[in-house]
Image 1: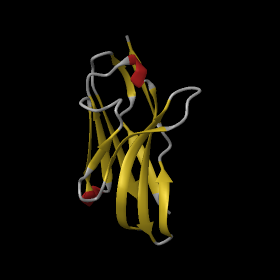
Image 2: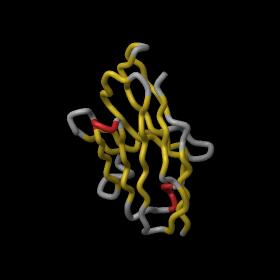
Image 3: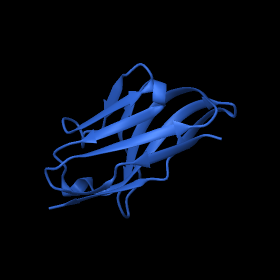
Image 4: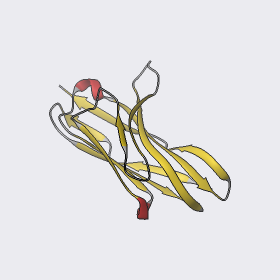
Length: 119
């Protein structure tokens, strides 16, 4: 069974930085796209950034120039460096990965990590 475990959330002041990590474990053969999504209270879950196994990245407009996604394929881990944080970045951040495992090709989600940015 594949699991995604996130870490690195917490409280930051506006203008500060946080770095999120998400490690995938289990009988993994290959991971294609990995990404970060966020969901604020009462709102839908939206894409923040994604990265392919080859390193191609996509960013939502909200994070362009402030957030950087990266991954370590050897460790099956994806990172999200968040700089110049704003109060509107406050949300639960979820890791997502498209994984080819012993169970076939499936999307998986982490449990979420809270990011709170104070003004």
